Image 1 (tube, rainbow, N blue to C red):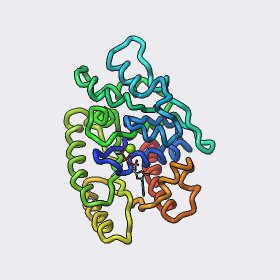
Image 2: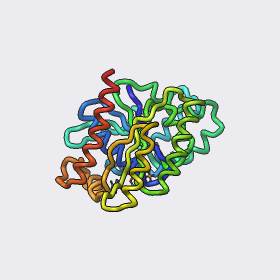
Image 3: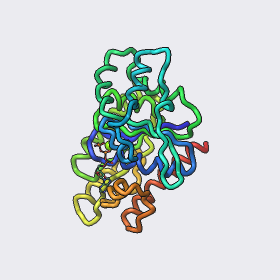
Image 4: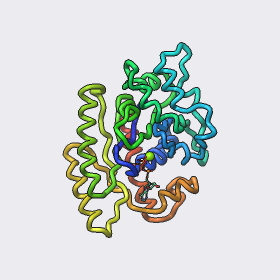
Amino acid sequence: MIVISSVNQKGGTGKTTTIYHLSYLLARKYRVLTIDLDPQATLTIAYGVDPDQLDQGVDTVLESYATRKKSRIKLTDIAVDIEWDDVKFELVPSRDYLEGLNVTLTNVLGRERILSKAISDIDGFNVVLIDCQPTFSLLTINAMVASDYLIIPVETAYFSLHGLLLLLDTVEMIKEELNPDLKILGIIPFKYDKRLTASRKNLERIKKFEDRVKVYPPIPLSTYFEKSIEEKKPLYAFTSKTAKEGLKVFEEIVKDVERIIGR
Ligand SMILES: Nc1ncnc2c1ncn2[C@@H]1O[C@H](COP(=O)(O)OP(=O)(O)OP(=O)(O)O)[C@@H](O)[C@H]1O
Ligand SMILES: [Mg+2]
C-alpha cells in the first residue's frame, strides 16, 4: 500500500483538483481509499457528499485514536462509496469539526502519528490518497508523517516560489524529525497560461527545482477543471485541448505510481 498526500501551505494551488482526478484515474486499476483531511471539505463536496449531513467524518476517526479508546473507529468504518462512471473507490469524508482537532490534538502524546496509526490499521487498498488543508497544521503534519510520497501542486505565479522554498524546507524537517522515508513524487505547475510572459517566466523558475525534485509538465489554466467538478465528469469527457493536456499530466503521475507499486 502506498500513501500519497497533496500538499501546499498556500491556498488554491490545485491540491484538491489533483486528488479529485487521481482518485478516479487510479481507481480504474487499483483499490483506492481517499481521505479528505481539509476541514473546508471541498473534496468531499466535489464528490457529491454533503458534510453537514454526516454523523461521522475523518475527525471521528482521529479523535477515537487520539483518546486511545478501546473501540477505535477505523477509517473504513466511516468511508463512503463513490462511484463515477463504473469506477469505484472509497472516500473518508471531512467536515468542519476537523479544524478543532488541530487544537485538541496539541496535547496528545504521539500527536503527529495519529493518522499514520489509523492508516496502518486498514488493509485491502493499493493506494491511499490524502487531500490537505492550506496550512502547516498538525493535520498536515499528520498527513506528511503518514505518507510515502508527496505531490506538490504549485501555481505558476510569482509568490508561489517563496512558498515552495518554505515547503521544501519543511519537508526536510519532517524527514529529519518524523518520517525519514518521505519522498516527493513531484511538483505540478498549475494554471499555466502560455500566452502570458509572467506565467512562462514562473514556469521556468519552478523548473529550476528539477535538480532537487521531479517537475511534471504544467496543467493549463482552463475552466474545464471547475466544469469537471460542477458536472461530476472526468476530464476525458471534455474535448477541449486544455482538459486533454491536464489529463495527460495526471496520467503521467498514474504511470509513476504504477511503477512504484509494481516494484
Ligand atoms: N488548471 C486550472 N485552471 C483554472 N482553474 C483551476 C485549475 N485547476 C483548479 N482550478 C480551480 O482553482 C480553484 C482552486 O483549486 P483547488 O481547490 O484544487 O486548490 P486547493 O489547493 O485545493 O485549494 P485550498 O488551498 O483552498 O484547499 C478551484 O476553484 C479549482 O476549480
Ligand atoms: Mg483544497
